[in-house]
Length: 105
Image (cartoon, rainbow, N blue to C red; front, side, top):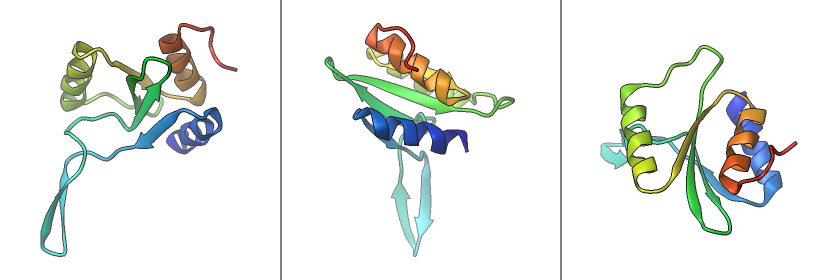
């Protein structure tokens, strides 16, 4: 529910974003690789620099996994930003932080 609300908000912003699944699966006998292990639930490209932002959506009690910690460290080391968000407002605040602006309403 939280993730769907964040995706709905992002759609209204005009920012480039996408929802990602990580890991791999087998489908009809074929091995299919998805996103990198631990990748954020939502990826956003923030203008004007094109900075890559990962939003990991968690419930109020949700905890980050070790593979997500590793992904977050790698992303930030490369100049991206990574946030754990638990609401639409937290997602707005994260994007505003990257933009260097006050929180989006």
